[in-house]
Image (tube, rainbow, N blue to C red; front, side, top):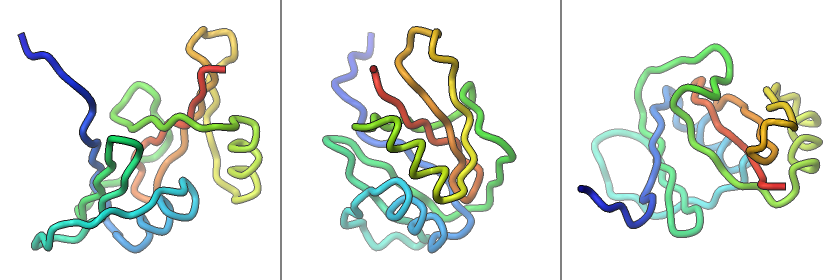
Length: 121
């Protein structure tokens, strides 16, 4: 049996690294990590003891998909997160509050990757 210790990183394919880095830095608020000089574009971001890697590649999504591949970030203030997304004109899908999985909403990054923003309360 494989015994996992922790999540190391999640990775998304992006078609426009500049657009994606703007989204992850200015909307989500991630801080960039040093990245090896790979022969393809991308960026790495630190999240606690984990990381998000974005990798240059063609890929497009249409709507947030909570059941598909995604990355989930815990947020400190769920209501502030919703307000900020509305102010930025970013559409989101919100889970019903009676599901018993905390409060969740989903957005798309510029390449159609689903990003979950959530809190336990």
